[in-house]
Image (tube, rainbow, N blue to C red):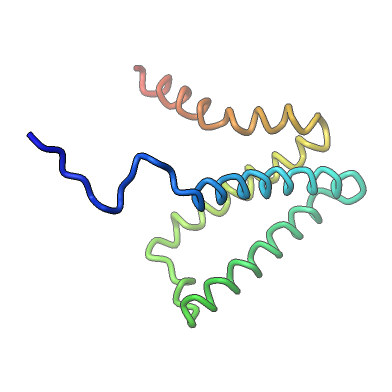
Length: 128
């Protein structure tokens, strides 16, 4: 029996993909450090506003240039999109408040543990 492989698959990771993952890690860590620094002198709500304002401007700019229209703003399920946006805003808000009250490393560790806790609590709620 022969193993059929696609010419597009490989056991070796593409160097550009590795570089993008490293850059993403640096950017995300940099955002948390910047938020902690800004939250020392500004109210957390102002830091949140700045984070979402610049994120929105950047995202809209990239998609508008890429698609040459604003059709990306239409959602097939706006209710779920609103829930998703509110959840992200809540998680970011709690994280930014947490980094003003505790060391950044501790807050980041708790943040990265959140998916494990959600899964565990879901399983407990299901009686499994």
